Amino acid sequence: METLAMHISNGIINGPVAAIFAALALATLTACVLRGRRDLDDRLAPMAGLVAAFIFAVQMLNFPIFTAGVSGHLLGGALAAMLVGPWVGALCVSVVLVVQALVFGDGGVAMLGLNITNMALIGTAAGYLLIALLLRVLPRTSAGLAVTAFVSALMSVVVASQGFILEYWLGGTTDLGSNLAGLAGTMAGAHLFIGIGEGLITATTVVTVAKVRPDLVYALRGLRPAAAPTVAAVGGVR
Amino acid sequence: MSKRLWAFIGGGLLVALVLAGVVCNYASSHPDGLDSSLLKGCTVDADDNIVGGSCPAQQAKDHELADSPLADYGVRGVENGFLSTGLSGVLGVLLTFAIGGGAFWLLRRRSSGATAETDGEPGGDATVDGATPTPAGRS
Image 1: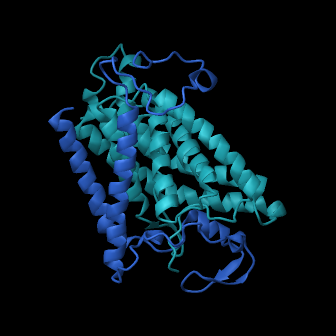
Image 2: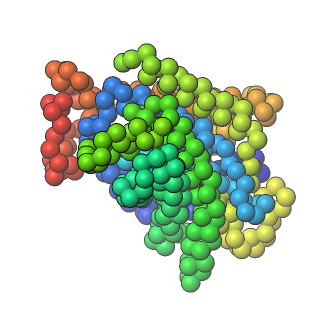
Image 3: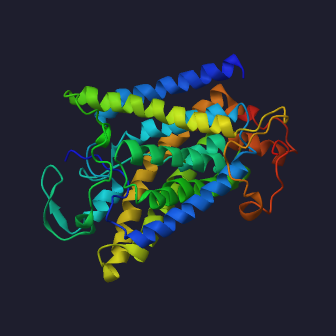
């Protein structure tokens, strides 16, 4: 098959539902711009550009999963949340999805709101909630950071895959009836394995950045004030 | 902006360019988790084309911009598959960095606080973000 499609294609979800999610995504992204501006300074802005470019690159790298006939690729929500924060992170993934839809013919333009909702919004939000929780309970070590990145990335992919099920339930173009639960299970199962790949890529990337420039990892930066009692929060990551 | 930061950004971009320009040619060409889930119920041939059965993927329609010069991660006119995919990846990384980095740079908080253009951003703070205080750098 010549086409290398990675996201929801045209015709899979009906027009009205796609339009509703486009409006929802637009409103949420506007909120991300407004709130994200507070995080965006001279240091974070170029970093966010790099994160977007890096996610674009790694999304091209489909890796095989459990069965021979199925592949997966990075979604990038947890990675972006970890490196540049949830608000700017959601915008990073959205930039990637817009470029893919408008330039590379990947993911229908009419389906853009759905793809942004699942991968940029749900994926990043789920990832960040877990990141915020795990960084508080896990030890401030390289291993703690790696586990945080791995688990939050894995779960973010599974949750994002269920966003599609919600959308398909609302506006899927094939009436699956009670088979929707089957589709949900198939999606969750496949994305559990994809999540392992996502987790490994996210953990490797975040730990590498934390070794070279710990100040460029947003999740660690945000932690410092909250972790006031014990000093040297960042030092433990080296 | 410091030289060290730009060195890091440059290094990261280089990694992304190698991944998208070279490594992507070794990526799996099988349908991903979403596509394969939507193919359930259909039988496919060796090239993953649907040959029978019924499944959600059959409803898929052509992409609006399927004729784009970079459609399907290839450069139209470049016959060599390896080169075509790699070149499209390199262009994609540079384009994403230019668009994303450019937009984020324009949106960023100016440290001086004196110059606060709004960059064409609609000033709808009160409706969407009303609960949180406006940053000092704005307006």
